[in-house]
Image (cartoon, rainbow, N blue to C red; front, side, top):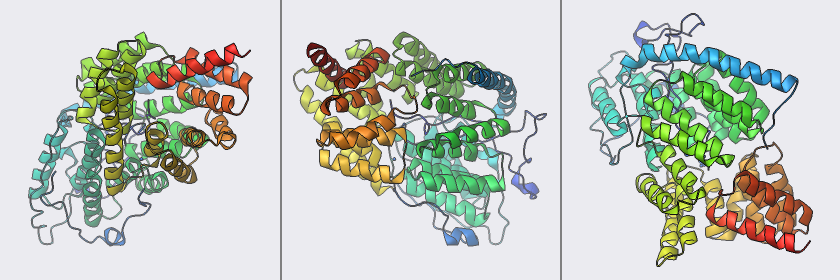
Length: 544
């Protein structure tokens, strides 16, 4: 499955930024003795999920000027010993202790949250209306909590914010929340056209209250959703200078460092965020940083502690899905299905859980259920990952019309990529991954090179290695394939790609090792890839 760092993360109400303005409705940074202090949640980008430069806010926003607002738009695991084991114990101990504090904080703030969920359809925003001729900007953060955007009726929540802003157009906090809501709507619905609306709303917030950390953190989330990770890092830093306890900014900082391949820095950022705002959004990122470094045991323990601490349905769905994805990556399909079942019991429309369940069903051989599940997912959110997975299931099934059905899914990836780029999204990684196997191979290589020039992560290294391979440049591909597996991250697709490239370069012993490792780890990692890995491994064994 795609990287998880930009997935939507449920969170807590209001971030409590320090402010001298009593109208801002904030309490300042929380202390360890004040578990009821609230924090905002952390929305994500497309999982695992893609360039428009977005590193600094516009000059007009910095001057506090006004901006046009949306009108009537359509709307390999390591056990660890010695010092490593000690650090793991400390991580889990802290997760348990802080999880209990976070749960108390979450329960204290639940009454203030407006539930929102994933529904189809567009939302219109009526005229911006007068700005109240000289009235001072205010913030009514309780109008809608950005930390709860992952659950309930998202469209209804946005409509509620729009009604509120028609009545209170100088509420800078609600403009910031609306911007974050548009980011979440774009991500969950696979509709990047929402990103320009998000940008306008966030600019309006900054024009009303220059430098407010809610809008700066929203800009960081928007940059991350557009896969402008240097911009996300810069905006998160600006928000944290205003309020070091802004949870969204803390989490977006971790996400950006991960996506830039700065894993040591990401680990340090996760520790710092855990000190400041312990809770589900931070715990899940803490776990993912460990997973990327091959420490699956600690990742699983932290996620289990986070799940024990979760009480709201959105939190349960999110953390249970993260556990399901972790287990799926290790080939533990029954356990993964159990976690997805728990996620869907909490929220039966949670798309990442529906997608994960379908992938696990496919890996266990229940192709019919997997196809039905992915068809349901792409009907609501046509993102590249599930579109390619569904297309490969059609190809693997091989029935009448299945090749055409698969082609339709891959064509939709191209359409999504065009729409994403029009919305300011850097979609090169998604384009490279899909096109290498199911499209224009030369275009895949161009996209992979462009993405590698921007950031050096394990995912971009793997994408470039595979794009070079499908273009017959295996000697050039091999160093990138090795780099993709160098951190210890246990990913069967990466091992498969490395094994195939090693075979093509004549390194048969290494090829056997990595192809076998891929199939031992996760034998159902891809309907087509797993089949090719078995065929290649059989050929290598026959040549011994």
